[in-house]
Image (cartoon, rainbow, N blue to C red; front, side, top):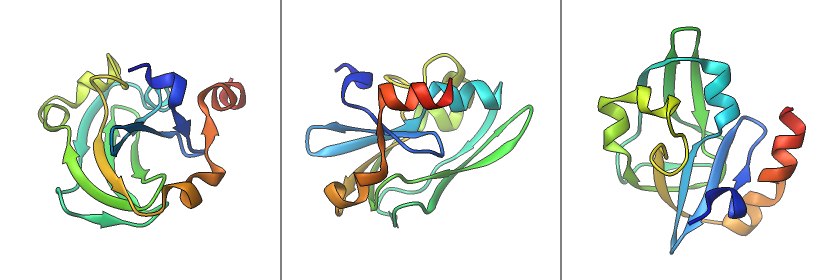
Length: 126
């Protein structure tokens, strides 16, 4: 799957991309570059529900700590266990191997109206 082709991004630097009947959520490369070397990641539990824009995870780097917001409302169906044990892997690959959670979205079409496609997002952050 070409992530960037179908990816939508939030102004707070999360991305979401459809994968079958689920959605994959993570942090954009811009967010990772701004954070620097990642040292800690706290992810939610499978089955947790979050509204659009709610904090679902926390991340810490050598430079800063930050909250991560869910770009659309939904239920967590899977978390990337590898990143909990080795959060520094986000610095190497924040897309294919560095996704944070997978969700089932409650109201994707409505919730995603303010998200940008990847090219527009890249233009805004450059």
